[in-house]
Length: 376
Image (tube, rainbow, N blue to C red):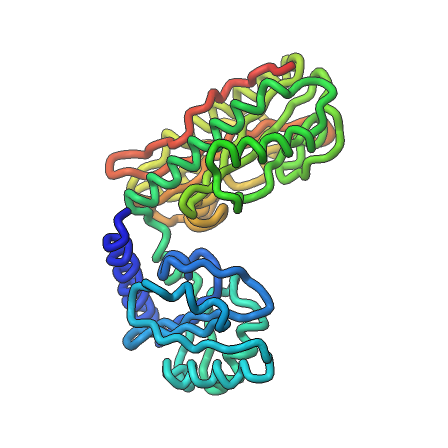
């Protein structure tokens, strides 16, 4: 996106935040480093011992507390931000927070925070700087900012999918009996970078074989792959700050009749979930479309997690594709569809794709084969 266009996009996002704050009876939002701050400002900071906090108001000038060594990042920052920089002496930091809080008018107001992001470190400074302010969760108004992606965001996710798929295809020839899970995971990370992923991956790849594949969030181990194993690979890439999150399952040397039957069932459930997605559809309807097939086949108790989660700048964000979530899907919402069957102590199958709701249905960004491919 052209620099001027991107600046206009960031300012529009800040304006939407101000509207969301007013609509939710919040006077301000304080946001520390993470996807939301990047989404609103284009700035990226690491969470570290030096606190960084942005102050946004329903009306008024935004402010930013940050270390002096980070102030060069403010060049070209869209919006009329007022910086409050501090040096290396922690004893002086509270005074800077107090100046920023006074400038923003925090004391005596209702201040929204990201409950899953704001640390005790930042909250302590904020509470000391504005002792009569009331700090409350702004999880929903902040999530509402990012839940519907625009064309540029979807393009970035599409590139992240393409990078991830290219990387896996480069790894498949090395997979066979005797290769360890960690060796596969290490090579996959290398290939992700070679294919063009940003160095901050959305998550460490899951490579789980044999009985380990029955654990949805297994960590790659030194277990060598064995003939007859199921092998689950869950991986993703990052492109322009947006992520992909995919899963495919393979058979090492061949698969038993039951494993073949389970893999076919999960593939059908994945297709059913993707087919159910579209504008005006409740999120839980996508979950049920995938879950119903598995339950009717007698494997319901072995599908142990929700059907999907939102993706974008984070690997897990709204909307969540689960039973009981009556959120109505809208154009631009992006999420995974990832049904699975996990047979304890034996093996598991999961097939995960990335889906974006369109004006007329849903687009699947990923297109790798979903069949149980035999390797080795």
